[in-house]
Image (cartoon, rainbow, N blue to C red; front, side, top):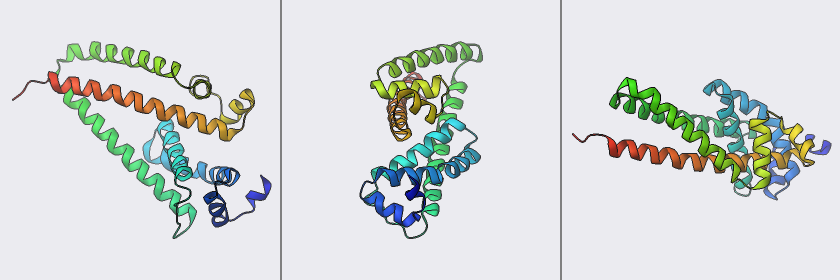
Length: 198
């Protein structure tokens, strides 16, 4: 890995175009702390910031053959995380607005009981979705999110590379976000259908 540390960003991106995983890993290690700090600063949410940074690097890997840099890689990544933050803020704003609308429609006395029921249901669903993940993705997710292990510790425990751990965690989070998003959509649809018409 030492030789990759000597490469310029431009050289790494050229190697990346040819699916060089070691070049990708070097780009990741070179910039993930910076992107994570930017995302945390803008969002104030460690987990969401981590997810956004993983998404940025996943997008880079998926689009590696098409990326053309007009400026520095650092600037490109900064813009990429900026757009992810804007999107996350928008989604959070929309969710907050839906919650306010729902709260306005329901009596205060019923609100805490209803939230408790939804929370327990969501927690049960999440446990079910985690259990249904592919085996390696499930193990990595549980060690990371439930066990609190760092990527390096998980890699040592599972006798694999940190790159593999990052891939399986990204895969698990992507699947869970989709499945949980479907639940929120169903809940929102139910609220809309139950709302009185004017």
